[in-house]
Length: 359
Image (cartoon, rainbow, N blue to C red; front, top):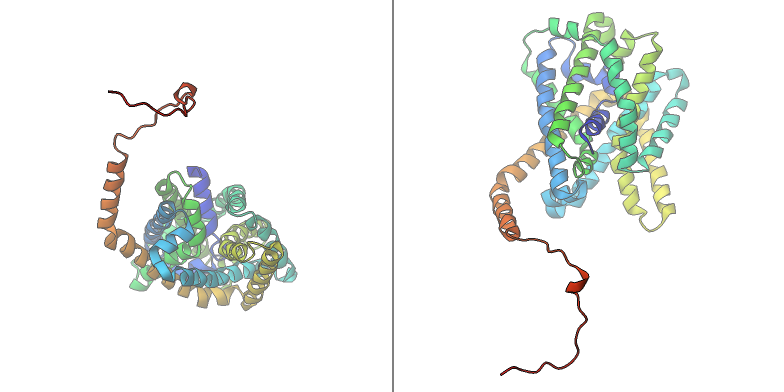
């Protein structure tokens, strides 16, 4: 996966309904003095992205990384991640309903079914959807956002503001963990892609929050602050639908991967499991976008931070010396090893006569 495609892939997994609507940004960063927390959150997000991508590259994807990190507890960890994936799934589906309440629940059902077709094709389908939709989404946020207000509104921030930024970075990294690790195994320059993605996501957050802050308390107190700012603009609904679709892809990915494992031998079982997953996510989404963002997303953020800290301690502190020994052993084993070109004349027929000893 090239740098540009990988960057779009990462951005698409992290910018969802709560982001474009402004609901989760106001919830985590506030509507005043958010400049510094957003910048620090972008730095934290970069390191968490690099961690997930490099672990996937080293261990051959999500399953290999969890097996290496958690040993015999790996299956339980994967089950927990799958269960947590229902939360963002429900949030993105509820985002469809919040966009156009008059079409509730027809829009959410149509969006869920459409996205499931891409997710059913695995990483290839998720990558195609992000590569097509994310550029249009970034252009929209840059055009209709307001970064100038964001920089003018700088002021000292309390510790809770920085904590909110850290939790937000942990939440996004944790939600995208399975798809990031699987993408990391084939990514050519993960650090550069992660840096570009963190820059784009941080800039988009500042543009959205700047527009909301400019509008005042009426926008800040609404369920979807950026929708209040963009009221009457049809392009907002298109952009929000694109954001929901790309993020819903990444949250459905681990759920569909589990269905694939369950129905490995029988396709009927696989499709039945997928249908059950979609029904469960849709039922959970009836809680509404505001309730899910306010009560469930902070829990995901805290879990994501603890998960990332564990990965750092295990991989780069406890395992550091062993890795050095293994890498030197591998270099010693490969030293002076060459491949010789084999021609047909090097393969003569075997003579089955008994050899006679020389004097």
